[in-house]
Image 1 (cartoon, helix red, strand yellow):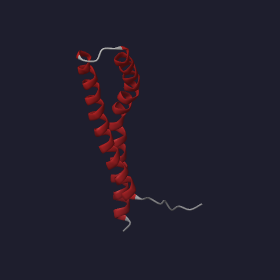
Image 2 (cartoon, rainbow, N blue to C red):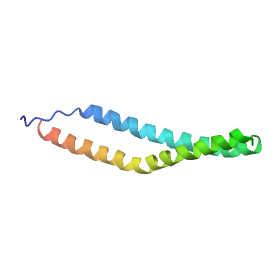
Image 3 (cartoon, rainbow, N blue to C red):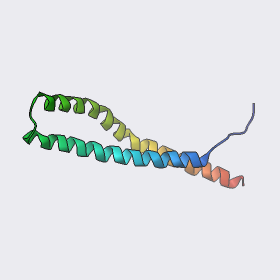
Image 4 (spheres, rainbow, N blue to C red):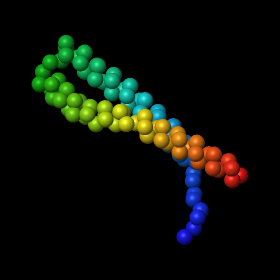
Length: 92
């Protein structure tokens, strides 16, 4: 068994950056859609409006849970990147 560990630090950094960007976009767009849908009640009030609202509410549970835990994943990856960078810097 080898004691070598292969790490692609650039890939981890790129993934974390993408994750942070995705999380921000998801939060903003979800909020905008929910608020826009609520505002549409004045002009759109048939059965499909409420059907859409029910579907949005159902997906909201997953989105809100995901966005609640997302910062811990971002922080974990940042800490991992910093630890790996420190290890790699000492072995260069």
